[in-house]
Length: 335
Image 1 (cartoon, one colour):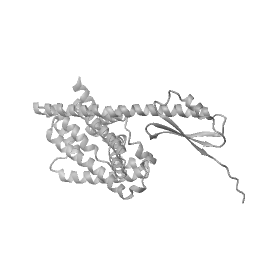
Image 2: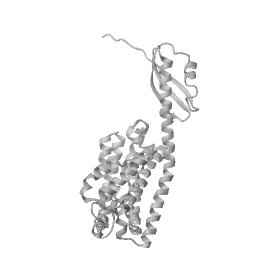
Image 3: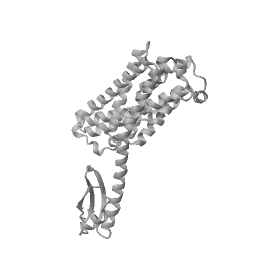
């Protein structure tokens, strides 16, 4: 059954020629090792530079451009392929190249940001902040993207979809983001951004190795030693994904709580201000962990704060409420 599914996925039965083609495409091996490494790190540094400036300028187009030219998918897929066929040497080389690429991307983000760190305010930049709190949905998307990447690389007739796969998975931008946040001393946010990268990394690794296995690549180089190496590699990837799923589940839960909290506070605050000269302009739960800040603007007399407290009773999840009032005054100027 698996053999027929593998043939259907790959298009043709996998043979030694096809294994060699894929090795040449995604593995860093002699005789072209030096040339492949130079190309890899040049593209990676350029990609990290584009991602860094794209993130700092809040430019979606620049970040997407960095994703397209980023070569980091190759060593990850190489590691997945090495795990699937149980090739310890391929696993080691791909792991070393990917670790080198990870460090290089973070360093580029840090070095480009450090000179202007005092002028950078990450909390006000959307492209930076959306990469600091990964959720379970990010893990699920990465699992599917790993399947798409392995499928596209293993079939010559669909290799033109690789740019789309590169855009779908976020690898270099979270690493550059980590460097930016380290340079601006936002260490907890940097950890969140790095967690997003690890989520994508291990998800691609697991599903990529699984799909290569289903396609039949392990049978070409099967032996007892490769079977043990493959089982160990897949087990490690699976354990790491399960460990990562814990903080992702927590952040997903916190996001649901925050969204529900903001909605309740916004609706009840508008009810509280109904018929007055004030309106709610924002509800913020991110400034302080134990405080919800409601900003209202207008003029006139505010209703008693106890009315709002009564409306929100039992809806604040143990947090305290703070109302910030901005009085608005209209000036008529005559020239």
